[in-house]
Length: 217
Image (cartoon, rainbow, N blue to C red; front, top):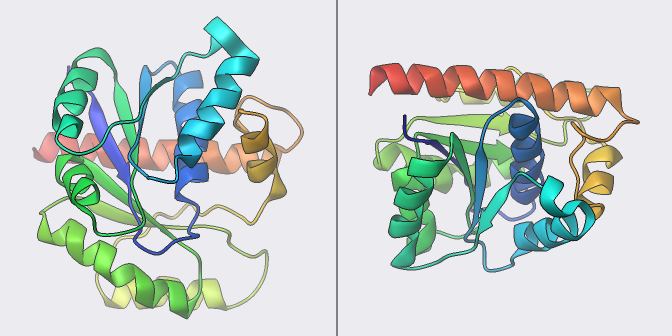
């Protein structure tokens, strides 16, 4: 069976795309999936995290990273589909050719946004792009505060627009950034059970969504 492709896309910067991509990759890998990463963001942050990880873990690093762009992206995705169970793409924060190609290739587009009106408004171009390409997409609330009515309001606004949003959200937790600096993920480093539980729940929700997309294909 060919790999499922999950593209993490958000044209607004600062939504946490790279952190989410890395954390999900580690969690899925620890569940026994063969996971490949593709970094097409010119900032190369995912590649920086991967380099730290490779230096730290060596052969114990079971993840694969490709940093490709332009016309090579399609060929690389075809190669990875044949060798892995899941391919996660960290896309650039702009509607560039590579971002469009990554969304077009996706089985599921994950759109992270912080629970604020500004982020909701700025997210619309990414949503329009995914829907315009006919891709299955779902929103993820990231850096969710522990209290407040704003999260419920943002969820309600998304529902009014008939936009799907994952029931699982990610809190504003320092453990995510701390493990990134170490080339790790919260799923493999002790110390913050709440963060690791959130990532585990997120992989379950995404896995179900990917299965649904596969059956509908």
